[in-house]
Image (cartoon, rainbow over all chains, first blue to last red; front, side, top):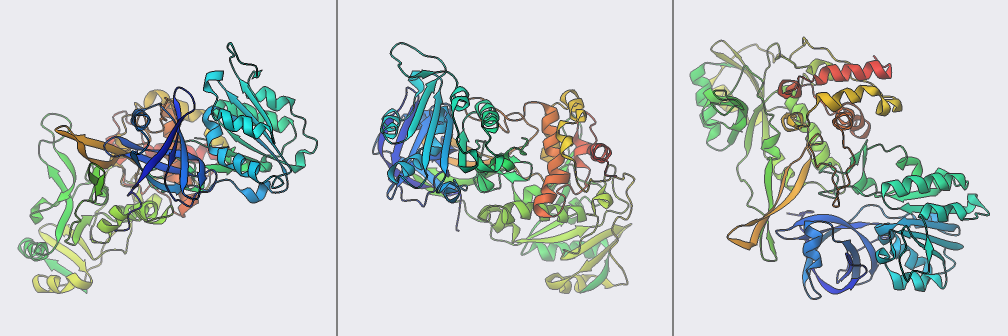
Length: 263
Length: 334
């Protein structure tokens, strides 16, 4: 039986501790992944969940996983050399052709940075693919900042702003909501700018309002949605909104479509 | 091929001849298994004798569990090894109603048609099933199949109707020789329900304003989110993955999928506690529009087949037929 529900076992190469509760797992998996796609991660006897691919290479993928439930707790207990189970990749990924030769603005909230990390890395490695890349990444507090080293590396070549909602001792960076950073952006030519917004629902809502004020057209904005999913194959029904299945039609949507999706 | 009349005895002989190399499923009564003391339950299951088949009543549960059991093991695992369960080998005869044949078509569209791959568990059950359709006479309380256009079907291997002690059948293909052996050829045509007491007007299209309409708020308090409507619906297909391990040895277990429902708490919950439809009114809106609007926009036919089960099952007397008609009133599409 050709069984799309059957996961394969892959070995964990390394586990990077990003924050107290976000770990990045590098897994020895050769999968045809595109930026923005996700995989179904499972441990037998524990459970299965959709997790976006935060980065990938020819012979590995990376998954940045927050410890929030049963499965993620069990995943955090694993060590390099242990195995985890994957099926996928699923979903559509980001439309890179839409960004080529334009200015790209990426706004993320919290772990929303994970699904766009590979995209940022791609543009970091091949400058000129987009004319300019601006990243505004918001986190709750300095302790919640993901991909610290990557952010520092990117800042050398890209316009990177990292902001935290609540500060603490030792933080020299920006403080305030990420929407405030968006407000301060000066878009010389909004018609030539494309934007990606990924984060919690409220953050996305207000960021999209700010982008509209900056003159960005809805058809020039993409969002990535997070929903409960059990299959990734358009069967289980959990992620359906209206006539749209987030797992197969998304998770990346142009905002002209996403704004009409009412859960 | 043709129409036959069978006595009760003939029907039993025909049934047992087919039972030799088929698993036979159909609607039946389970004495004493109703939700209240001293009540019976009705639903679909294996039929061992022809007398068990519930000819004159709509079963409370639908035949969907023949194709997608409420709890189904996808894999057995031992440590890191996944093994698929053994497949049923025998072909299946399923006695069901015309609207339920239409309902199986809706299941097909999700499990076989939607997404990048067919569902192999559903597919291997589905391909083994032959439909034996049961005539509905004048229909049952709360049915509205005529309004939904699902009162007829031509997709069957045999069609049966019982009138008094006589069974009339239109039998096709591989089952015709057995029918000819025990039946008496007659001039007879399958009769489908032509008129229901309940008439609904499914909307041809709904206005976007329907999402904000105050009508849904009424269900915040009327609906209790029990999910009976999801469970009895012949077209509700949703499921949730569930891993279990054996208490004697946690290194062995199963991955199952279990029936899920959009009216039930937890359906849209994310790890961390977020959830996308908190109120029962929002869930009612989601379910209603799926059954009579967005499924049609994606697949070309309405999902609801008008069997009336959700109306019969609702402990709060919420009429889905009435709700569909209210939708038409709100959107001005009568």
